[in-house]
Length: 76
Image 1: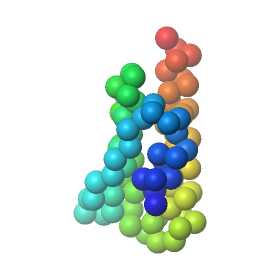
Image 2: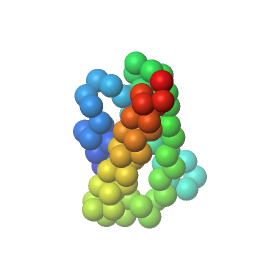
Image 3: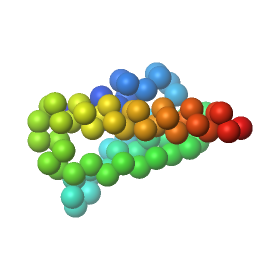
């Protein structure tokens, strides 16, 4: 749910989104295809307990990536 949500909320073809399992839950990794910047977001199991919580996590990750990308474009 989170992986698909993040992927759907970011511009198509601009980012590669992956998730890997960790001992506490998952780690969602987002990589910019053009600029090769990357981010990792740990996601606890309890944050995925309901669809609504998983959706909120996806929205939060997408917002963070967009904000960081926009800040980087402004500073260069």
